[in-house]
Each structure stands twice: as C-alpha cells, then as structure tokens.
Image (cartoon, rainbow, N blue to C red; front, side, top):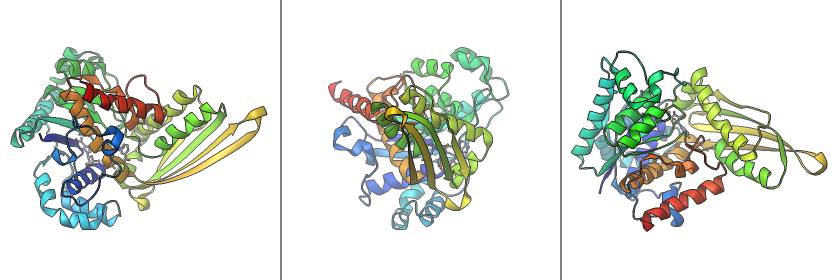
Length: 379
Ligand SMILES: NC(=O)c1ccc[n+]([C@@H]2O[C@H](COP(=O)([O-])OP(=O)(O)OC[C@H]3O[C@@H](n4cnc5c(N)ncnc54)[C@H](O)[C@@H]3O)[C@@H](O)[C@H]2O)c1
C-alpha cells in the first residue's frame, strides 16, 4: 500500500533529487544505485516499495519543482534526460508542495501543518506518512523550560512567540498527526525530552540526525581502522568546501556551528579520545552541490614513529543524500508499522550524529541495521 513522504524543505536540492530519483526508478528509467535497502542483505518485503512512495511537503520557496529539477540537471546533479521524461510526474508532486503555514501561535501553526499532512494522506489513501526534515539547517535554539515536558510544551506553544525552532515544530506536528519523523539535518528536530515523550504518547518512531554522506562517512570507516591497529591519532583536521543552498545557509555562523559539532562526534566516540583539530566548513558558490573535503591526519605508530595520511573527497551532496532519504522513509515506515515508537537508534548507519548510545564505526552500524531489517521478517 502507498506510503507518504512529507518533505519539510520540499523544494530544496536533497528533496527534489529524492523526488526525481524515486519517480525515475518507478518509471523504470533508473536503477536504485545508492539505496542501501535495495542491497540483497537489506531487502525486505516489510518495506514499502520505492515505487509506492508518494511525495508532498512544505517549503517557503516558490521555485517550481520542474525548474529546480532543471537547475539540478544543469549543475550535473541529476541527468537532464530524466527531468525531461518526468515532466508529468513532477507536475503531480508540484500540487502537493505547500507554502509553510503561519498562525498567531506555534500551536495553531503545528495544527495547520498536521492538517496539510492529514489531507495529503486522505487524498492519496496512504497507509501512513513519514515526515522527513530536509529543510535548511538552523542554529541551535535557546533552551526553554517547556522543552522538558510534553504538557508544558503544549501550553507554551499556545502563547504567541517562538518556543520551538521550525524543525522541532515539524516533529511536534508529525507526532500529533500520528506520523513518524526523520531528521536528515543537524537541526534540533525531535531531540527534546518533551518531543520524545510525545512520540511515545502517539506511538510513533523517529530517527536522526544529519545524513552521513561525505567526510564523516569516510571518518567512520578510517577512525576504527586506526583504533583497531592501535595507532595513536594525534590530529585530524578537515576543510569542507561547498556551494548550493546548503552551503549558502552554512555560511551563517549559527548553522555552521551546528553542522561542525555534528561532524566531530565520530572521532571522540570511536577512538576513545579527542585528537587535536577541527572541521571547517566554507561556502564556495562556484562549486554548487559538488563538495570537496580535504582531511589531514597525523598519527604515531610503534616506538612513536610519526606518520600522516591525507584524503580528498569530491562528492555530489544531493546525489549521495537522496537515496538515503528514500531508505530512511522506507525503514521508518516499516518500523512504525511493526509497532515501534520513540528513537530508532538502529538507523545510526545513516547519520553523523545518531540518536542514543550507539557505535560510530560504520561496520558496526551496518550490522545493527541488518539485524533491524531481519527483525521485520521474524516479527
Ligand atoms: N546533501 C547532503 O549530503 C546532506 C547531508 C546531511 C545533511 N544535509 C542537510 O539537508 C538539508 C537540505 O540540504 P539541501 O542541500 O537540500 O539544502 P537546500 O538549501 O537546497 O534546501 C533547503 C530547503 O529548505 C527550505 N526551507 C527553509 N526553511 C524552511 C522551513 N521552515 N520549512 C520548510 N522548508 C524550509 C528552503 O526554502 C529550501 O528549499 C540541509 O539542512 C543540509 O544540511 C544534507
């Protein structure tokens, strides 16, 4: 049965690449390279088929989906022939991308968001809807006493003012509409005790945070190697250059800090100590969605001998992110159907800053994910 994917940030690069990709796969025009749920070990009849995903979303931008898809094609992110072949399909999704509602209080705004999602579900006879946040990264919000308690949060949201950042308001709206929620960004999302309690109260699961698609993905493979060989990493410094909407937004110091924090967690937690060094993010308009990461690692071996390693990663950010968005929607929908609620820590494989106390080494995260998928068959 059809499953809805409601994208907060539905006109952004990651969202539109996901929509073009899923639609192209459904039409038999592309194969699912990059979707890990299509690998033999992770394939499961419990997951909704890629072709059964129906898209909608919110975005304050007004660029039409076909225009955004053409811009992505011109930038080399998606093939132009696919965009040309999918004009009708993109027009159908266009009708489901709404402006972001605004009301006098955040409680009323959340109710309008939930109404949009419920109407989308009804129109398409969807079995369930997964809300996925792929909107612009926000700075960390100021703490608020109502963040700790679901009832206090409801009360505080009813008073004019901003109690929750947009990513968390989407989580609030998703949970109250009985939908699961995935945060693909480093924003706060569902990471507040009040929202965790609300997810349990409405018996819905959530996943996050911050899709692991580039430098951190490589780190989560290399850091365990240094640890397993008992080599002492002394410094690990990285510079990330990116353009596009995400790059422009990350030029804001608050959003940049949220992203840099999310990217550093893997080292301390895999190595057991913090090597010296930082991860920097710089906006370079000209490279668009194609990110370059340069990392320099210095380490000591036997008898303290000094050595170094460098790597350069050239990735197309949205092409790396989109298949994971599709995987996450399928896995989260299946978890919801199987009765799971609260954080889906088994989905750590997909995230830079995963929920809960989980391994950061990619191989261990993979094993956790494989056993999670096998669990659907055993249920
Ligand atoms: N591409 C990757 O590899 C990758 C990896 C990890 C995380 N992310 C995160 O995914 C997000 C999307 O990345 P992108 O490259 O598509 O960025 P983008 O700038 O192209 O798209 C973001 C979209 O969000 C919209 N938006 C802004 N505020 C909103 C709101 N309140 N409600 C709904 N929509 C809103 C914008 O109008 C824009 O269309 C970013 O937060 C980014 O950090 C991307």
